[in-house]
Length: 416
Ligand code: NAI
Image (cartoon, rainbow, N blue to C red; front, side, top):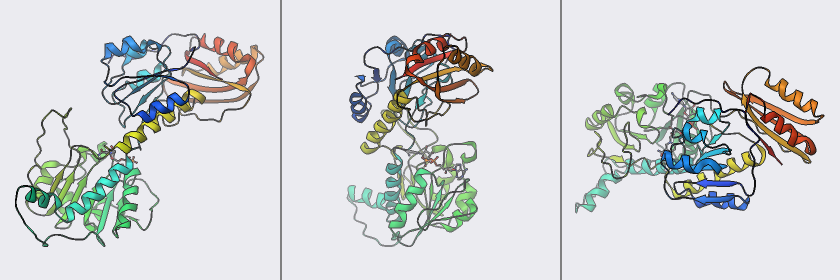
């Protein structure tokens, strides 16, 4: 990635004819349908584009949709004068140079919550599977062994589920688990509203000592790195189960393998690993392979058709809202502004370098042109300022042109 620079002052972004959307990597048709309903012109490609291919195609694109395999870096952004926004139709956004996009006035939207339910449902299935040793029984019958046993198999009703990280997934999971008659405890670093009859614990230690199942739903941060290691596993009940469908860095895998081999931990379901294969054709090795009552899945917690459809809708909704009104709520790299459109006005959206005096210069232009401001909202971050301004319709064009000519201008357009 090259060092991002601020682009030079420009003319307002012009959109002649239908707005052009380029969707890569087989994005779900739910997105295409929404763009088409808005009258946008949509081009859809099955695969990802290599950086040089993207640079060649991006010039006339207004909205770019990608998933995890297309890198959007400075050279492409520098060649995209008309680009209004990027939609990452996935959860992560590290394939986009977010700082560069910010400095080019391009907000990046993603879909952080569209697969919440899919993960919660997988964990519910795993709770029952671990409790009944279903992974092992299934393997045995497939290989011709008949082991009809009740010892070590339990109902989940009345058991305690300890949820570490009571965010979107954790809290949804708690509600589902209660409907199966489980008691729910949770531990979170933030104060959270307990749903249903769930109860927070004051410490992680208390949760580990009180739970039959411990399930992890925290982000990958410094504070969660190996937050479950030998000491934490030792605090869990003998025979308790561990589930990790959050991030691979959260669990110390060799320590978990030891605790499973010794029989202290009764089973585990793991969906995420410290190192994961890049593609489906790469092999995979883990210290957990072959251990009894261990369910291993290839990071599929959020991988359902429903989640893909929901990601398509969630990101397309954010992009359409941004195109139509300038709303940046949920953008991962941009000052957040969302204000209702005012009838019979024109809205100017201006992204500028965050240096002192820009608003004064803009307001002087407005006043010199005798324009009446109906609403004006400015939000800034350390690089840029994002101004949303509603003006009388007849003056919006000359005002936008004058603002786009300022030395501090990055991107200006009119939403009519
Ligand atoms: P979220 O941001 O809604 O919730 C995370 C919660 O963890 C927050 O309430 C936060 O306060 C809490 N937290 C942060 N640090 C903590 C700590 N040190 N101790 C205790 N609590 C802490 O996130 P969401 O959407 O519920 O996702 C949770 C995890 O699931 C993330 O790591 C995400 O990447 C992962 N995930 C995995 C998927 C899969 O395919 N297996 C799919 C979707 C998400």
